[in-house]
Length: 168
Length: 193
Image (cartoon, rainbow over all chains, first blue to last red; front, top):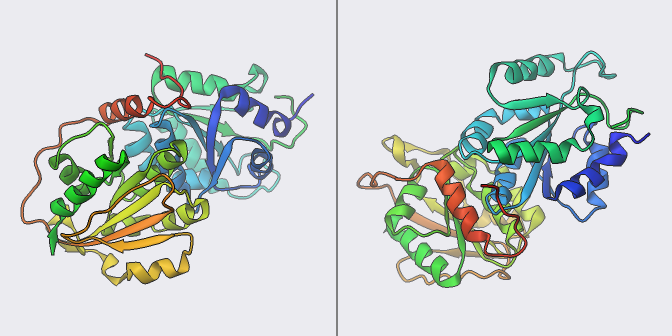
């Protein structure tokens, strides 16, 4: 049984991801550590909104690029997500560490959880729970396939720790 | 002092001579750039303010064999000031940021921008990854290369004396056109459809 931490970089490589840009979070840190050991270009951004710009530039150059941020950082960046990524119909995949849920062992940040849940429910963006689809194999490849076919961003809500002993 | 369209015209001509890709900030930079003459190598941004240096960083990293120029407004750039830090940390050799400083938000009827507090040249003293700084005037002949080092060009320009012409493209059209243009290079994937 492989955890997401083990599978994440192989999934990205299989998906043909060329660039990942992120602002770290406790869920994302082990994934970023593994990315740094790979051949995938990782760009550490100072703010989450920048990630959307950097990834958009790579995507508009024909690459598969991905953003990894926490839900609070996504909430900081909604305007950019809407007016850049959605407005340009960009096939972007965004991995959002969806902190503050019922199973989050830190048990804090419930407001960011509620507001991001509200965002996903009440906007027309395409978002899905990684946990709910964890047995579907390489969700990164599937997310890019959807994003490119539908010409829209896809949000993968990372709603569990990738170091947990959960098969993905 | 240059009108902004004249400063952008100097940059645009130099970019075309150098084969540079150009990313323009939403608002006056995009509309004035278009008015100097359209080109498929132009990635016009239509939102939000401040993203030109970040988008240009992504373009630069994805196209290391091409010079990349971001044309930014002073007001927009201070909305995304941290992009200078991120760019400095990556230090792509092919990226130049140009700041059009008119001291106002041009499309608002000349509301002053807090960017007037910035000393752009001395600012870079704290960001040593910026290898070059230059100031643009009527006699400038900038050159862009894929190996020139991370650079900043500063242009003091007048607030616009007229409105630009209507901008004709939708955002998806800009994306499709730019992507098609840079896909001439082998490391890019093909888009579906």
